[in-house]
Length: 258
Image (cartoon, rainbow, N blue to C red; front, side, top):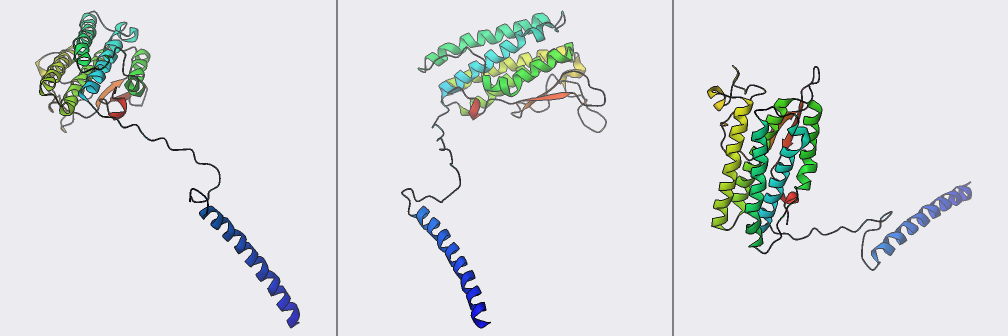
């Protein structure tokens, strides 16, 4: 009896000991490898190091050009121009032409800093919100969406230049950035008056509880020069559901044209 029990225990102990030895050998083999890495199942892809980039004045100017071209293209898009009424159409066309003129003004500034001028829309921003905004305007087929989008785009350009002023190193260039931003701020005020005309629309229209009346745009917003995302409501009316809101941000580090 005693001999049988001792035999069973010995076999069980042997199996445990063997398993521990196998596991220990695997760990020791991993620790003794050339790279001293932790043993793992499968392969881990190599991590690509992010490039070292610097936000230079030339990069800011190139990015400003890409934003100006993006806005010019969006204001000239058929989905926008086909919906604009007779009063708004020539004004929006003049805005698009003004952004093309700004491209021409920025080009020599870029060249003077040994960089290549940009004549293409900022693709990251177009992918992020530009294409979606145009799609919603086309689906909604609402002429007021054209004015709302125009105001949002001009506000976006003004906010972009204001943000870039804080990053620009050359004092003279900071002054030029402010002048460029002021032009878009004036165009934003004009488009706001097209959307809601008259003296009453100069400031935010408020409800009794102090909230801003939905669907209105103030010619002179209560907060001067906000750097938060520009919000614009676009698209078709859906019963018992809010319309789509597009959030348009100023360029960030991943959308700078280095």
